[in-house]
Length: 79
Image (cartoon, rainbow, N blue to C red; front, side):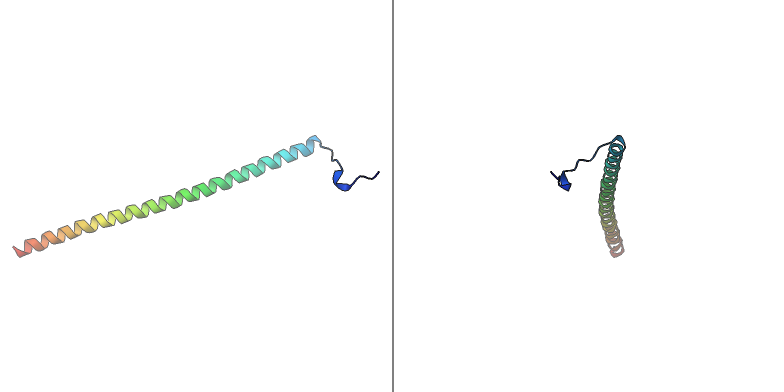
C-alpha cells in the first residue's frame, strides 16, 4: 500500500525543535516591539493634542488680559 504524501511523518529532532522555539520567541518579540511602538505613537499623539489645547487656553487667557488692560487704558484716557 502506498502512502499519500500528506501523511508522511517528519522526525522531530532537538535541533528542529530548538529552531522552532527560537523562531516563535523571535516572532513574539517582534510582535511585542510592534505593539509597543504603536502604543508609544498613540501616547505622543495624545500629548500633542494636550499641548495644543494648553496653548489655546494660554492664548485665550492672555487675550482676555490684553482686552482688560486696553479697556482700563481707554477708561483712564476718558477721565
